[in-house]
Amino acid sequence: MEHVADLDQTERDARSTLATTLLGPLSERGVVGVATTFVDNSGVARVKSVPLERLPHLAAWGVGSSVSFDRFRFDDWIVGAGEGREAVGDLRMMPDVRRVVPLAAQPGWAWAPADRYAQDGSPHPQCGRLLLSSLVSALQASGITMKAAVEIEWVVSSAPGDDLVPGVSGPAYGMARLVDASDYSRDVLTALAESGVTVEQFHPEYAPGQLELSVAPEDPVSAADTSVLVRTVIAGVGARHGLRTSFSPKVAVPGVGNGGHVHVSLWRDGTNLMAGGAAEHFGLSPDGEAFAAGVLTHLPALMAVGAPGVTSYLRHLPSHWAGTYACWGLENREAAVRMVTGSPGASSSAANIEVKCFDLHANPYLVFAGLIAAGLAGLSSSSRLPDPVDVDPAVLSADELEARGVRLLPRTVTDAADAFEADPVVTSAFGSDLSASILALRRSEAQLFDGVSDEDVAASTRWQR
Image (tube, rainbow, N blue to C red):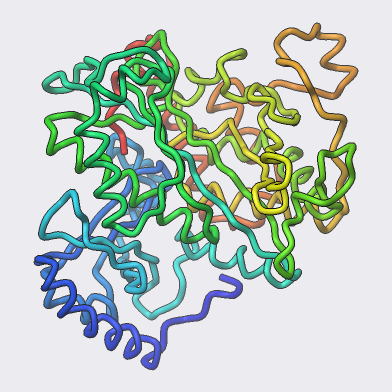
């Protein structure tokens, strides 16, 4: 994997030494076990853990993990390639000890994200976190860095078992709901702060029992890590309050689902490339525009990564703020790509683009990797954006949509898989093995739910995380 080095003994020793320095502080925080996770190609966080005293060994040599996890469907079915090799081979989950965090909502536990390597120390070609690191390096080679964040939406349920009963009451965006959820919300914010997460906004959302928070932007790898950490903390706090947490894009039918909106901005020498440019493009610099144009061009293929399941497409309804049309516009919440400039005087720091068509069943590392691959293609060809759309595209006639070059994004996971397979920019960036696994999983899930009612699909994936 380009830009990602093999693990040698020097690197292993350095990781072990750093882990050793953490033992005392973690023990003082009451930590007795360390969980390390990777996110699989279905968007599920898979875990291995060790007692705290084993952390230095874990940091140097990792913990075993089957190669079959690359083909794990959300329901733990292994989607084989027909060669019978899924049970053969082993990988090492190597925690990033720079990101070890005590989990305030799970006393006694700490967490760290993991990269996956082969036993000989070479990078695993299907590790999303290593892929993202590689693409971040490719972007930096052009003198550009990225700041990114994932918005987190979730629904809490007070029902026992798998049923759904909204765990907090009150109107959408209403203070009454925040009052009803006051103690729970306080504990969420406290646990996140103690876990080192900077929360910028927190509020009740549209659907019954739904809440949302936004976090501070970081580099893409850290932003993906934070997305995993935030969801872990939220679920942990919910469990302590007797609430079950759903991040599903369609918790119930009918109803508004949970999005996983992604915000990105590009920077060069301390200057925000999403600001200070042409007025007709709301301040986007030429490079900012080219990157955004690349994202928009390749968005149909990226749906196979950012909206990865059948349930994702139950959320993708026009006029539901789900970004179902491949277009862009200033503060247009029905466009797949929303240009956010921020308040006058703050654009130089706040301007970014928001991709609205993704959800939280996605692997965040693959989401950012796909966005960078698409954006790099736009940069290399100096791509230009089409005219912005300043209305809900759903109100435009078919002729108007065609004249503006606006099309619907894929309407099913099968359509998204087909678009992914047909896009050489994205598949080349991901590599043949990872691309094959993504395609096999998407098509297997489509087959699993063929003929199944929307209600049963939503119920089957409600608690996936």
